[in-house]
Length: 335
Length: 151
Image (cartoon, rainbow over all chains, first blue to last red; front, top):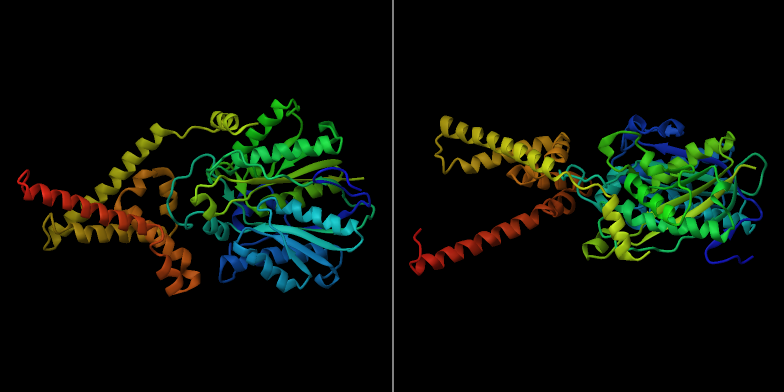
């Protein structure tokens, strides 16, 4: 059924049957979300030689944990759809190599949690899979060096800067079974670029993309804000989240409704993290832990998750380009 | 929404940097770093055979050594978040830029990693520092040759 630009409806009701989330040591200490995670590492490098190896290990373990919860092993899964932010996504590639599941690496920057989940639902909907793993990860040290300065370089960061989270999240998607949250529909984002150029203020760059996808999702699927118990953006951070809500307010949506942003809440009230968390592990680790648990517990009936990603590279911003941004939305419902 | 309107909105909602507080912090911390440098220079003049002019080289090396230690222990970064320009402008900031790059690229080996990337950030400082010193010296030499000023 064709139902509009970028709009997806899953009539067969694929479900998220289990999730796996791993977080780093700093997150365990400072993040209120760490207690929902399945595994907390005591070492940022997971006892391995490089940050990139640790990055791959965290993703790999998240995948294995998700599978183990439904008594499955990697050999039972038909597809693995994961991604990250490192050049050529080597951590995901190595993780995929270790688990040995047929793999497509997917890049939507920090929106990869939702783009992989939507694709997993599509494969299930098409009847081509009965177990697909979707997910994404980020590791602070590996990502900071990729996009910014060396870790120990002393540069003063402003209030808009975000902290890349060390976390990974994976979701196991299967055809409908009772008692698991259903992926009912989704909306693929359009690249939105309103001329923002500051890589230390990505929330402001991403907010219009999130607002655009939100509006397209509600209009396209004929939903109203009251249909949701929770609308949660990915990693807009404190300032980007305010901008997002201001944009929705101008379109006359009632923003007092339950809106949350995973990045803004990620490190609780700790001021040293400035605007909050970012990274492709940020939304994945919150959506697939706290939000998923609350769906299972019946605390949330229907949620709209809008993961946001800024699609720039160090090269593009050094060449003076603006920051193109994307936001993908997925609607999950507990029947 | 068009770009201009959004940029205005973004400006309104983004908190302004605390310029006065940052200036004060930079002034005090930068001055403090220089005060330590002064003590180091006095140490070399008092206990070794250095004059005020020749003490600058060992002083600079010592200050960079301090910055190196603090960078390695992860302290310099925290100091810099508070100090801002106060930690970036003195020679210790230069030391931090070199050492942090070296530590960062250790995992790629000593040649392609440490050697190839150590001056990634500090390279610009060296290039433009040397070039501006050359330009200033050239101007002064010309002025001296014309008899406008003397050495």
